[in-house]
Image 1: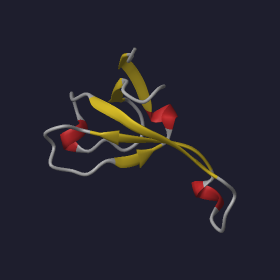
Image 2 (image 1 turned 120 degrees about the horizontal axis):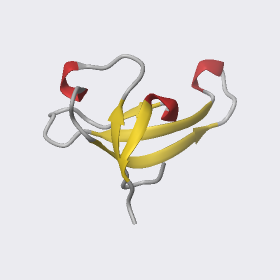
Image 3 (image 1 turned 135 degrees about the vertical axis):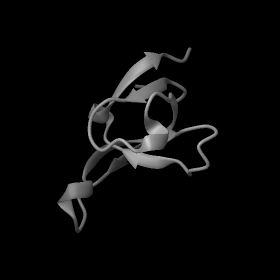
Length: 70
């Protein structure tokens, strides 16, 4: 997945405002080993336009790509 891809949440906890809606990948982050090992690894920052919610960090395996950016 790349920044700018349209994605759909398919696995994990899905909020009502995420159902049937496409999100946009706005950033990719890598967390190094720190105090909490649950936060270690790769993350996507996904924004849902029109939802009124700020961008959130998610694990990449929770999403599928709908449309790839150029």
